[in-house]
Image (tube, rainbow, N blue to C red; front, side, top):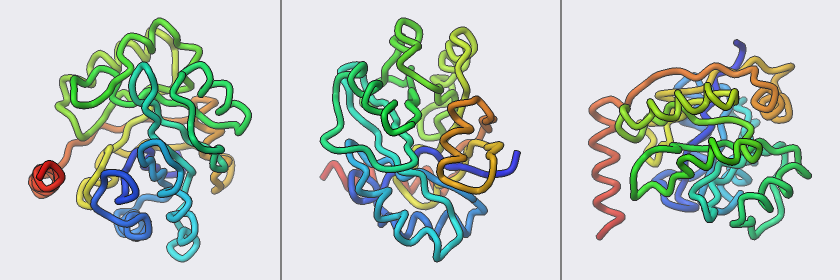
Length: 219
């Protein structure tokens, strides 16, 4: 597996603490070769990250975490989709296919406040290209149903930090076997199942940073 890939992180464009530029810089320091900034319902964070990606020799995949009628769906693309992004999962599937994007079910069985797609992964597996079987932000026990369901539906499995704070970035990256170091190659590898998830949890500092940020946002 050639590339260490962080497929799920958030910047201050939505509800993260860091700028997209700082996320790219942090990825370089953490040994992450490629990442997707997946801010809520917009590609703007990933577009800003892409603009500085060459300065740090980090691949930036265009991404967004879209709130649909089922729950959140990650969209990873070689180029940004037109916005606003559809909230109907079937329409999102059709539009994403036009851009050769991958649709991933993130944290599918984590409880609220995470808006998770749940058993729609099983009922409508054709909508999804992959399943996030390990989300490092939530409690590990909630990843177990995702592992079971991903195997049952035969979908590629990915992992991610779902980081909203810099210290959590890259704690559970996906390993990608890509045909060349390119954004298109990373997305294609997901679509073709040339990915391996990893298991990782946030360290004490990251946990404390995440709690502090959650409290700050709620004020």
